[in-house]
Image 1 (cartoon, rainbow, N blue to C red):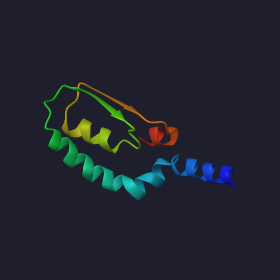
Image 2 (tube, rainbow, N blue to C red):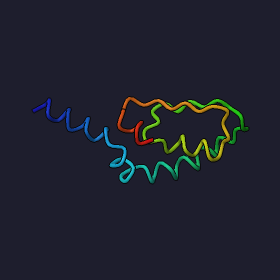
Image 3 (cartoon, rainbow, N blue to C red):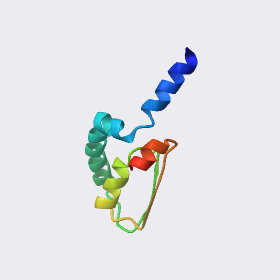
Image 4 (cartoon, one colour):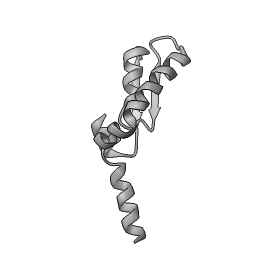
Length: 82
């Protein structure tokens, strides 16, 4: 039974589309406020650790004018969605 619970949890974190409809919309709102709050100059290098479906990365691209942006996440499903 413990193995089944672990596989079910893994499936929840494998679908970017499911996560987007559940949390992604809120992540985008928070990301806008966070990037504005940082108030960093353009042309910086960014690292988005745990980038998930890319909500923060997308906001960085739109609002922070990065020189380079790298996103990493252990979920292949989230990365392919991003």
